[in-house]
Length: 66
Ligand code: SF4
Image 1: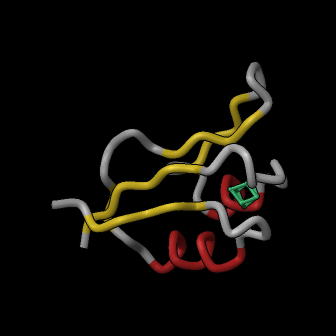
Image 2: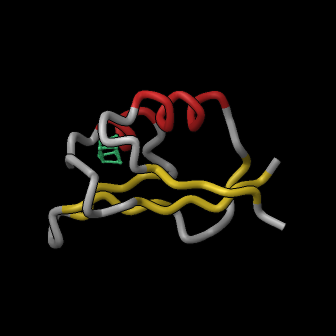
């Protein structure tokens, strides 16, 4: 299943856990001091599921890509 991902910047704590778990999807944007997610839809993997479930701010939003 493919999903689209976005980060709720307001709730994101900037801990970087998601970027450590799945660096190919979540990037640390040091210039803006925030985390960004891939603009492209991605296949939902166990690593991504883990990043979503462990996010301390519960701010990784995702929906099935149609
Ligand atoms: S795990 Fe959640 S709170 Fe931490 S940087 Fe990623 S999106 Fe932000």
